[in-house]
Length: 20
Image 1 (cartoon, rainbow, N blue to C red):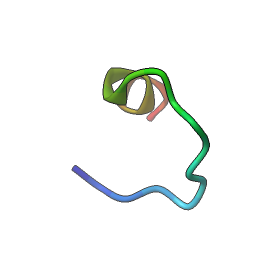
Image 2: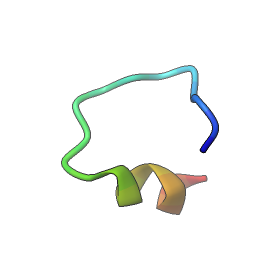
Image 3: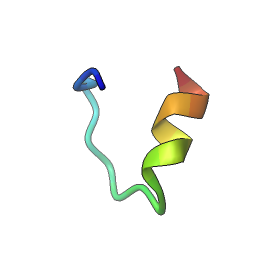
Image 4: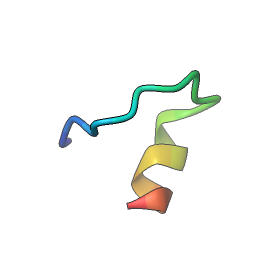
């Protein structure tokens, strides 16, 4: 898991991966 620059209130960690 890579730490992204932006750290907004995501509903689920999956969303972050999907954006990537």
